[in-house]
Length: 194
Image (cartoon, rainbow, N blue to C red; front, side, top):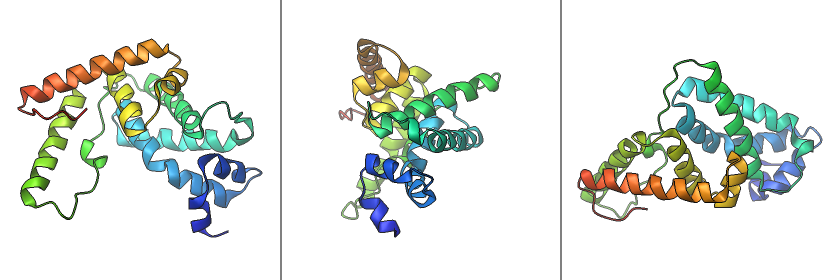
């Protein structure tokens, strides 16, 4: 099967195509999730080398667990659940590890070719300020915002993934957004980005 065929499949169909031992389908699944999981891991561990190591562990666990996926959640929720547990385990192994964030410029959309230099400069500055503001949040708040805004996970999905009540997710998102807005306003950003 060619690579374009794999791209047309939903996550669930692609996951099903991986079983039994279809390496080509799994490569497509890996490529679909590699950057997303890596960015998520960076929000938790703030170390590119450690995030790469954990990414390999996550995808190995996905490969080994293909037949255990029950379909009670989205494939992305299942994969990010594995990533969350592996990241927590990775942090436990590394003593004194400081948690940080992901450079927002790695996530921000590509510049619109219609934008002029001033608009692009403003977008870059906003991305830089947002990244700095994210770094000031607690790791719990960074993780929640990443899952909500960058991964598009719903509150119930995040609740299931982190093993916390939905109301705790809502509270963390609210306080994280408030802190982020407060920090950005301190730097002169007045537009509502959240």
